[in-house]
Image 1: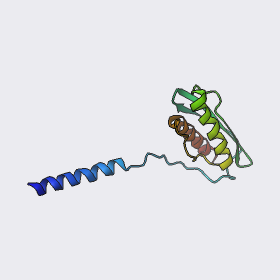
Image 2: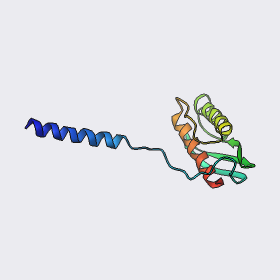
Image 3: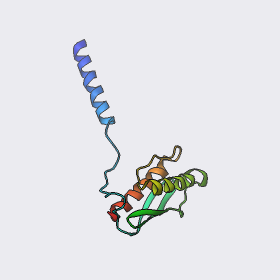
Image 4: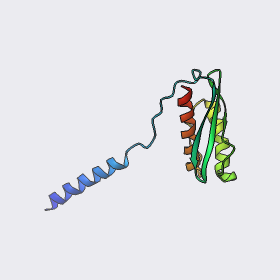
Length: 122
């Protein structure tokens, strides 16, 4: 009886760990920086306090600006995260930057929107 219980518990633990180990990161089809088509690409992000527009400007194949100023995120948390992340994304030429601690929902929303814009430019 103890062996059956041990085996059943072992199987349940393995199944539980497997279910928790799935990746929630989305896959995007984005070409390399320097190859993006010039233009302004826009989409909507779903932030902590509602949706907001994100516009990524591409010039000569590179990100030159990311605008997400018209948002309802808290100025000192979500708003500060947007400002920090748009600068990082522009400097590093990628949407895939670290989220800002304390503003994870806003950070992930902005990153996802930027990724969708870069897909459009690819």
